[in-house]
Length: 357
Image 1 (tube, rainbow, N blue to C red):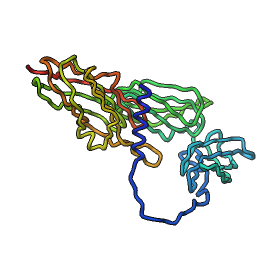
Image 2 (spheres, helix red, strand yellow):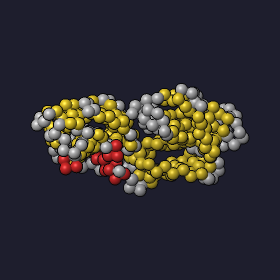
Image 3 (cartoon, rainbow, N blue to C red):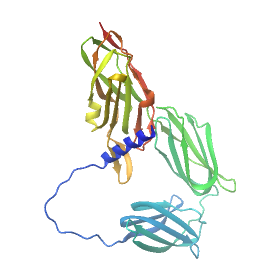
Image 4 (cartoon, rainbow, N blue to C red):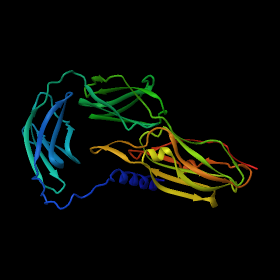
């Protein structure tokens, strides 16, 4: 299963990078710009000191800072055009010196130096800011927030009322909790808290988020006369930001013949790609694997072309013998992937496909 997931995601990401282009004829070669830093600064954002810099090409960074000598080191290992990174391990109302070393993909290095003054502590207890809900699926969500000083992590949550809680004792300024085993299509209440080393408790805002609807695949009840062929739609629901889908359907022995698979409107309208179609009449099974383009804003994944409900495919079946065809989705071979390569579980329904005498 893991190999299949990785392979399908690789194709989805490959498609997301595909495009078209052309040539306008001979041009004069232009050499690369000289490497330069556009800006480099340390600023206060919501009571938290942040390092910000940008260059004329993607860079990583090595950031050193301290009160009179460099005692702290922060490595930023992601290549990007611009960066904004929260600092930690500093005192309030204190002046610091710093040196940023920006490094491009070829290993070229540039330094930027300066100093910054941290603010007065606004309140004795930790201040909670930047509460965010990310990577929400039908059964999980990632909750993050920041504090203006090191503090433990406490998250209250629940359906309608935040009555359950998760606690992490580590004193940090960047807080993260991944909630699992959530109910689909459900509104959850959330309240973050933080406790500093002196036992002072900061309480964040009461907030809510909704889990995604459960991805659903279903076949309608269908009647087939012996010798006739019909198109049976494979319906999909709640496919928001779906990057890949594999479904496998089995039938009772000798009852129907699988003639083919045809793309449905949901596939065509959302620019799908048929990665694999396998018809195994000897095993009374059909398997179909599909992918959709992942959309980006800069380096951030923001969605896919596959959203909503519709008919993803049509199965062409021929009736061979009277009785129920015994159609059923194979749950072990049926799954979805969201844009973050997280597996989406599926609700599977099949109507009664019957061959008439």
